[in-house]
Image (cartoon, rainbow, N blue to C red; front, side, top):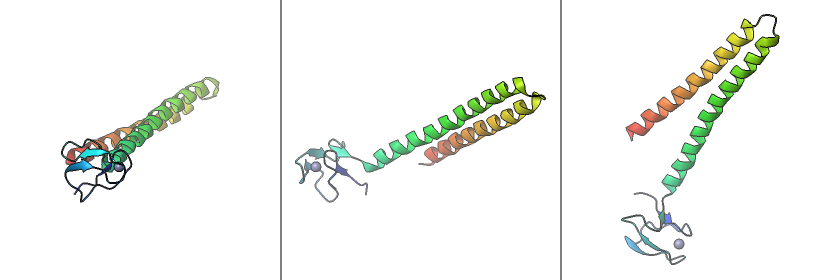
Length: 112
Ligand SMILES: [Zn+2]
């Protein structure tokens, strides 16, 4: 059974009638259309999704910043190819990790 808590005060509504008032705060709820009900599952999943995309953003922006830094370094380096290749490889690896993470998440979501 899905965990269901009052959308107002967080009282556990499991075992209570399909619809009615929260015994704790009087908030009216309806389990059939989830009005007045907060689903902890969804709240958890939402923050999890935000955290996931923040990680992806960090990887992508990190890769761009590293690529930019190596570009600047190559202007001053004796051998300009060295920092460019190193930065390019690190940047590509970070992009690949980001793509792999998105793919894994996509597969995970599809399985549900
Ligand atoms: Zn309540």
